[in-house]
Image (cartoon, helix red, strand yellow):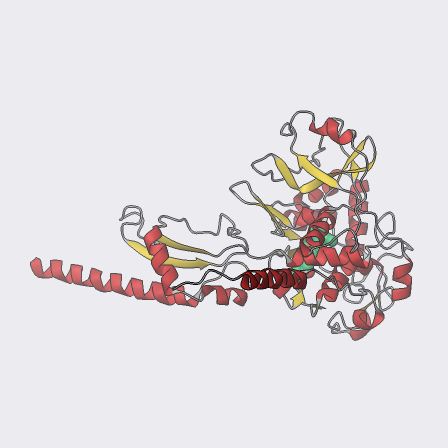
Length: 448
Ligand code: HEC
């Protein structure tokens, strides 16, 4: 016989639930990010040890003023904003965002605050008179709602609407999927450098500035002295820039001869060494915070032996400000929150290469099984992804049942890879088909 729950057990349950809630209260442990001891061990030493960077000391760094982060607003593509949107922005007061435990209570609050930093531009520029001013030569991806997710409007002064100018984290680390949704942390999907190549060819003044900046970001005189680099013609540099396809950039520490791909930040919590070079260690949230400090200007003023790319008293952009530890912590939590959302498993039936002319679409099909482990289902670049001919739900479920622990394997690699179980399964299916075909062929021979 079932007993009705006693008053005590109900009360006990309520107390237990309250206790659990209390235990879940978020207590931020914010590291003192730029401390000399951890900074010294942040990076793996270079081959030429005396050329490893020497950064500002903790004392010098913490003397810099903290950057003010203002609330920002979505940017709509020209002609896509709701009526009166831009005018309503002009009427808004500037709103400074607060980063401390008094203003931010839950972990979600911190993550949301971190997203504001991800979107924040250190050097916003005045927007156009009626809305967003599209950078010349670029056509930025737009979501199905007409939003340009890599850019934001910001109000730092009432009546003046400014736009981020390709300088926020979001500018390089956001992607719009073919279905028109935005994935923050995804790899940029448009080419930037061919536009720079255009201006480099167009004006000697722009060429001079670009070359100077190129030296600041990628000069390594112990490998190639400036005189050698200067022998590179403008046309050759422009040709290199032209070759940088969508998702590929020349960033600090790389060069026009060795540009890098922008990595997806989705799943960055699992990465142990940052960057294509793997030079930067990721042992703790503090390391990610230090990485962000280095890459928002600290590296350009570092000393690499006797070489300092840019000697200035203001390392971080035009206003010489730095992030506070709280801001960096929020940003790091936001980056950690960028998780893979789902695993796509697709069954693809495609005609075998070379058989297209003699067969109908998929008729003499070879079954390609591909487990596409994606970070939040980012598709492969269209040119590289095989066409999906079929995705029968029953087979999908069958497959799913065959691979119960697919999820465990997702840490094996980021992006899209083949799952060996699927490959093995594919081989098995193919051999069954081959065996059947053999039977059919030999059967028909016998009948003949
Ligand atoms: C101009 C484009 C650009 C901007 C702006 C930018 N990044 Fe990146 N980011 C890159 C590129 C390119 C790399 C790869 C560098 C390499 O491999 O050497 C990278 C690498 C990273 C990595 C290492 C990830 C990995 O898998 O190794 C992190 C973390 C990161 N960026 C965070 C940020 C944050 C946070 C911001 C804003 C403060 C930001 N980035 C702004 C282009 C950019």
